[in-house]
Amino acid sequence: MGLHLKKGQIAMEFMIMFGFAAFLLILFLSITLSRTIDFNAQRQSSLIKDLALGTQKEINLAFESRDGYYHELKLPETLLGIDYSITISDNLLIINSTKEQIDVIVPKPQGNIKKGLNIIKKEGGIVYINP
Image 1 (cartoon, rainbow, N blue to C red):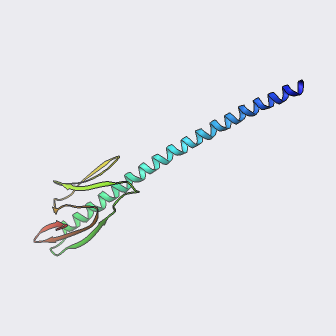
Image 2: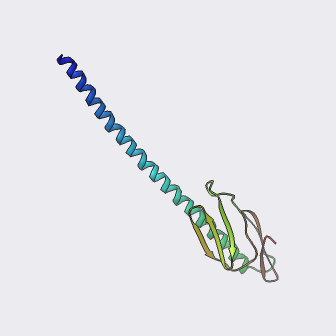
Image 3: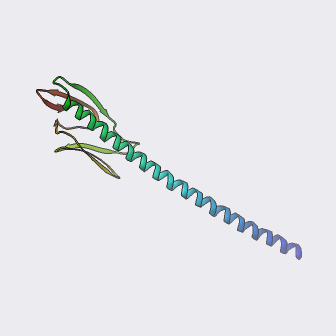
């Protein structure tokens, strides 16, 4: 009978250790998932900011250039697989995604910007986007 008591005690200790190990594994996985989500959000935010600043730079360059300036600017359809919209309203270049909006100041061109291929040119002192 003493042997059965030891087997039961060993089984109980095994279950306690297994439960503790499972708890630690779940805790580790949840922390890892949380950090991965944060990293992806920061990466998306960085890509949106880079897109906004790069596009702002292209528009500013067109305004600073002489007549005859011509440039093709290709904007990605998605950022890390996440959809976004881009538009120019008054003097703001606005980029919206599901999680954030970035606005940067730009001189107001004629026309509007879009995802995909954009033509930026300057004629008669006026900057046109996708004329």
